[in-house]
Image 1 (spheres, rainbow, N blue to C red):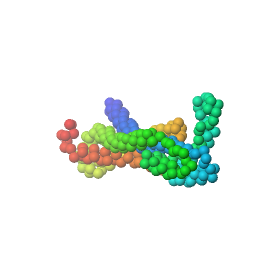
Image 2: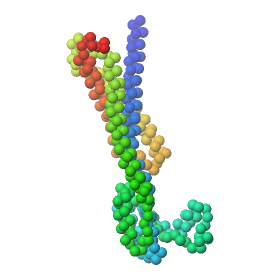
Image 3: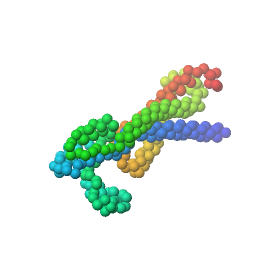
Image 4: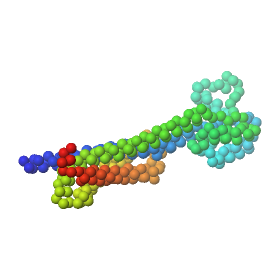
Length: 292
C-alpha cells in the first residue's frame, strides 16, 4: 500500500515538474520569437526602404563626360547604396518585354531618355532627405528631371513608426505576461509542498536551509525550460533564413547570441525570484493558514 502511494506521489511530482518546464518553455519561446521580431524589425523596414528608387532623367544633349562624373559622384555619395545607368535603348527593350509589343515601330522614334537609377540607404529614405537630393540634382543643367514615389515613402515611414510602437508595446506586455505565468507555475509547484515546508520549519530547520532545495530545483527546471525554448527559437530562425534569405537573419551573430543568452538568463532569473518569493510566503504562514 505504501509502495503504491509512493509511486503515485512520484508520478504526481514528475507531472508537476513537466508542467512547470512546459510553461516556462512556451512562455520563453514566445518571448524569444518576439525578441527576434524586435531585433529584425529595422532590418525588415530597411529592406523595403532600400527598394525605393530615385530616377534621374538626363537631357539628350548631356555629354558623356558629365554623365560619367555624375555616376562617380553618386556612387561615392554617403546616401547611395547603388547606382545603375539605364540607356534609352535598354529602357525601350525593358518596356517591350513588359508590355509585349514594340512601341518604337509605332512611334518611329524613341521618346525615352537616358537615366540613372539610384538606390538609397534606408536612413536617407525620408521625404526631407529625398527633397534635398532632388534639389541638388535638379540644379545640374544636363539633368532633365528627378522622380521618386514620395507618397509611398511617406506611407512607408508612417507605417514603420506605427509598427515599431506596437512592437515595443507588445514586447513589454509579453515580458510582463511571461513573468506572471512562470511565477504562477512556480507558486503552484511550491504550494503542493507547503506542508513539507512547514514541517521542516517546525523541527527547527532555518528558512535558508528550507528554501535552498526549492530554489535549486526551480533553477534546474528553468534551465531545462530555457533550453527547450532556445531549441524552438533556433528551428524558427533556420526556417525563416531558409525561406527569406534576403533578410540575412543569420548574418548578425552577436545580436542572436545576445538574445539567446538573455532568454536563457531570464528563465533562470524569473524562476529563482518566483521560488524565493513563494517559499518565503509559505514560511511566514501560520500552520492553520496552510489549509486556505
